Image (cartoon, rainbow, N blue to C red):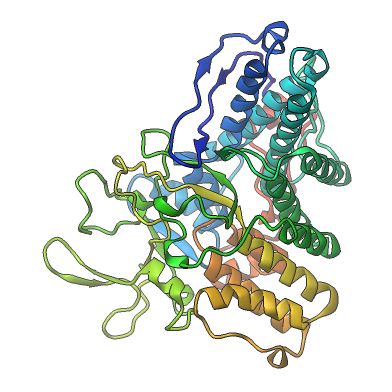
Length: 484
């Protein structure tokens, strides 16, 4: 395992609710607990460095969200450009432990954990920090650490559990599944107790954010009662609701909406942006002069696009035809003869007029309120079978999209409603990196890939521990199925 180190840069892209700005960036060559613990400012600088590593924006978002969460599913694929070879490994289920994306995800997650641990190691010496403020900072650090572990767990399963930045053994075994699960749950519960309901800056942890990460963790662990209860607790906070116009939900001008529970803030500046649209604009699309089109193209499967009802407002976020700069109208979803083209595009992230080149300012949602409603609907169905409440929750999502409401009488079994909720989650969250985990939970990830002609194996529900880490730590076991 890569050793935790004491050198770091404390910088974080967090944005104010009224306008976009950077927090002050402070570059450190070595931290001194005796110094940063003397003030709120010192503690916040360390905490900001933890947030910076937790956030997945720019090219990291492309790798972690799209390669890990979308291209290996029945919703989205990629072709063209220099990125095609990298994406193909995930489309075809041919990834391996030497893929550098896994190195990056692992290192970034453990840096967030390390930087959180630095603050937590020194909380008792922070006598100059007011008790109330210290309590909140500690809760934020616990949130970041737990969220980072939940992120790593989603991809790799249990990993080494490190809860201090002091005297770390360079060779550590992986935690048991039970220990890692208990740690993530306990930390998020504790953080939720002490976090405020609102923060001045987007991207910082709140009570709702901690409960939302916890709710989704319960969901993916199939802890149905706990998931349903956590979702209900979030609803009872009365902080969140569905944004009215779903096709404008992801536009820059609407990112202060109360559907977003936790986000990765973005700026239209090099290295800090949402780069998805540069991969989405098709060749010859009439873009603004300050934007760019990449050769690497993110595309939607025709079967997925066809799953929407014609009147579904979410179809407004999908480009199925356009007139290019030569005046030619291009069909994207099906040819004139009805052939599936698998080439429609997700315009969910409405292009930012002020974006610079590939970088746009659209915040990237991690969890939004729609996810919580559908999580509770799914959990209730798994516990009790179809009920009016679970159907009503689904209909909140469909009603917002102006899609037809479903009726309880049409779902005679748990399995029938489960399949509908799975399909509804695809329609609601395409391009947000959730499809892989949803398919895994439904037991359809591997079988679905095989149906698409991929040589997917059962053990590929987890990604491999990076080979670099296996070689550096002789006690670190590789996931089943991958080269030992």
